[in-house]
Image 1: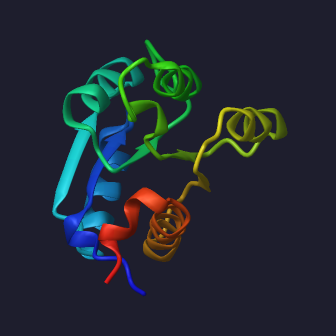
Image 2: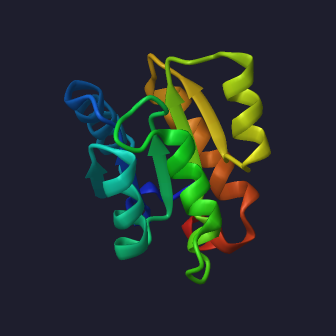
Amino acid sequence: MAVDYSKLSILIVEDDNFTRGLIRKVLKEIGVRSILESSNGKDGLMEVVRTRPDIVFCDIHMAPMNGKQFLQGVRGIKVKDVDKTPVIFLTGDSDLSTVRFAKEHNVNGYLVKPISLAKLRDSIDAVVSSNVGMTQWLT
């Protein structure tokens, strides 16, 4: 079974324009067509509720709302199924306390920057194959 990336809607929550552009470019290279972007966690949380992306790639260190607060917001939201939105952290932070926080709050993946096409694709594949509700993206 392979993932049909062209059917996925992915939100990038990243405050650095260059990094956000790089992630967008890599997602396009693997075939993702629907790519949404937010430059901070607060806007990203509103975008998740508004557009219901299939997967969110989120930086941790941002203001005014950082990635940890974003994840807590997604997991605590009272909108049907939005709290289950898969979130993958993209960060330069490999600190043990941050990794522990991510696990405790049910993050769906953790990628340490710099990202690569293979790492990004593998993280999407892992999320899709581990979520029963995402079988429509398998070919």
